[in-house]
View 1 (cartoon, rainbow, N blue to C red):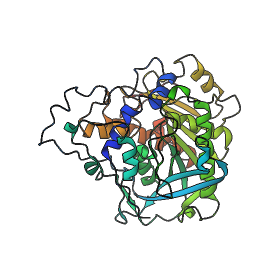
View 2: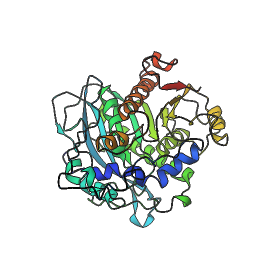
View 3: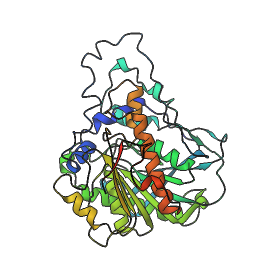
Amino acid sequence: MKRNRRISAVAVLTLAALITGTGAGFAATTTPSATPVATHAFDTAPATATATATASTPSFHGTLPAPTGPYAAGEDIIHLTDTSRLDPWVPSSGPRQLTVTMVYPAVPGTGTPAPYMTLAEAAGITERRKIPASYGVTPQTLSSVTTHAFDGARPQRGKHPLVVLSAAAENPRMMLTSLATDLASHGYVVALIGHTYEDSGETLANGQTPPCAICDHPETIDFDAEAVSRGRDVSFVIDQLTHGNTAWHLAHLIDKHEIGMAGHSLGGAAAAATMIADPRVRAGVDMDGAFHPVPMPGQINRPFLMLGSDGHTPGSGDGIAGRAWAALGGYKKWLTVVGADHFSFSDLDVLQEQAGLPTGPLSPERGVAITREYVTAFFDQTLKGIHSPLLDGPSPNNPEVAFQS
């Protein structure tokens, strides 16, 4: 499915500073003992950066890590409208509208390179935060970021498990593209859901890209309500993808009996909230997020993985994480990654590094590699029934990963 989705690099790279509001606030409240996140991007950029810009400003060339599996990653964009409910944040806009990126196992060498996001989605972020010209990041340079996903690629035959992805607060869905393409290359259909009015902008079916309606006053956000709302988005998307082929012409690729969900930060909380409400989601992953709302015993008796940064443990904070963890009744693992920051589990740190912006102690490439490897291993084990020794305990190949529980 062709569409104009030229990326603005500014859009991606300004997210770290933008998320010092809702996204970072969410992370900070879940892991108070950890170093505050989102301070490593623009807050720490050289104060003289703008003054040192010259006519020879370097050009930014962004490339996401290539998928590691045997398949290529095909991509489609679909637009869905839930006529059963009004938009929870802007009821005057009418029924809830969603934009979803579908990424699927494809035949290598087919299709055309898929862009990262629409120009309007990029502009939504650039309007909130400016990047010093000295970094060479412009809408033009970021429009050519390599995603390793391909529009119109020929799908692999057969049926594949479905994994739904939900990004962090204020992050558009594209921030989990590296994970999505890798999962697709290993035989998963992936649905990246854009939660309208909750981030810098998602381009809808009518071509409009509404801005965030809840980002300017993060102190007023009810994270429980937002996570539950995202869960409703997810259940609606699953409904549309598993009842015929009207929502997506490749829906026949989905094994509707094998569905998982992973999310980053608030998206991770939404994974748990979705599992409480929707038993079709058989396994969940929370990447550096908390539990909103806190599950009660018996509500989630299916596999769950916590993968996070230092300090993000069952014993951190005021004990809520530990009580929530104890309430989970199924197979579960809690892993932490030494040196990781809040954005090690998304695309953001990789692109910041490529632009010359500061990142956390852990190499951004290692952050993406670890995230991909453990999330894929978890879903291989829980959705495909393929045992992964990687989940049994510490691995000499991944010395940064510590098993907390």
